[in-house]
Length: 159
Image 1 (cartoon, rainbow, N blue to C red):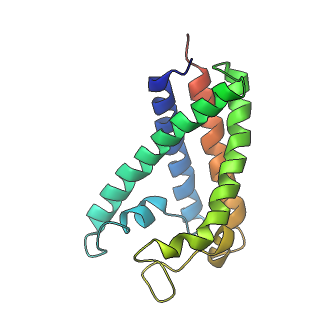
Image 2 (cartoon, rainbow, N blue to C red; image 1 turned 135 degrees about the horizontal axis):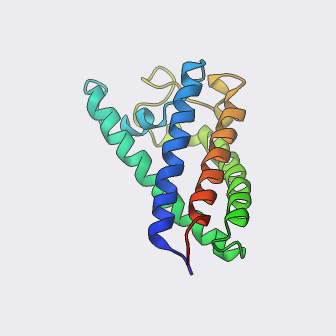
């Protein structure tokens, strides 16, 4: 049985830790700022506080939604809420999630109003390669963090 509140909480906590790691990567020179990219889909760049506010809210909402998706997968594969099984499954799902997102980055400029050649955000390209050679690994590592943390938090529920 899926514990919905725990799935949402796990998604929130995993998003928080992944976001901290993302900004640590940004400090080290990686070009990662998902809340800004998400916010710029809806808010004009002349309102930077609103860009980050909207982007952060949506980033965490998406993370909570993925918490539910991961919990559904945990139960479909039989991991349930056993912390070791959900942590391991979360890491594997995180790898798949990161690979899928990386592959999808090449088409994001088609739907993002401020992303493209000569736009506010340069297009990331396939696996973010336009942002540097370390981006593909960074994308996967961030999603491994997300999946592992999500699995630990979700698996820690007592049912």
